[in-house]
Image (tube, rainbow, N blue to C red; front, side):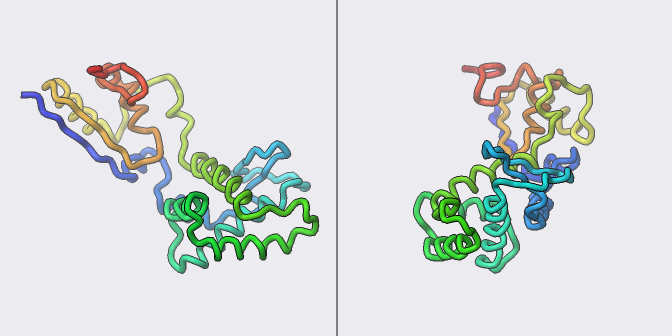
Length: 212
């Protein structure tokens, strides 16, 4: 009898492979300063990762807003920073204008630092740019280049026992579904590249391994 078996992988699944945990990401975001980020004239957002920042930044106040808005949230929330809760905080303002008085007040005070009125932006425009850049920041902290490479490794210690168990279940013709709470691509990389799994795997965007 074919069984339908589901696995739920927590965010710690990829930690042994070097992917940052939620706690590590939260700590890194809170430590970010204006010297750690750079916004190019074409609005491209870069996390410098220790590289020296150019002395002149035409987007200095946007960089400053990025850093100061995170600090504002920490002060407002009065609890430990959590980047997922913070992202919800930003999105809920954009969609429903939640915390409107507090956010609009912060933006109004921030704009007083900007000497050129034409460079000042309202809360809607500031948060629109901020949310896009924050998503890129999270991606840069989570992504690992090797997960994008079109090669597979023969072994994935310490995941070999888990892979062997999946292979055993597949050999018994069970239908396996894996749900991941991670933001990284480790399991997808393993399942799409490992010799015993790739022919059974579909990520939902292709028909490889799919009964449909």
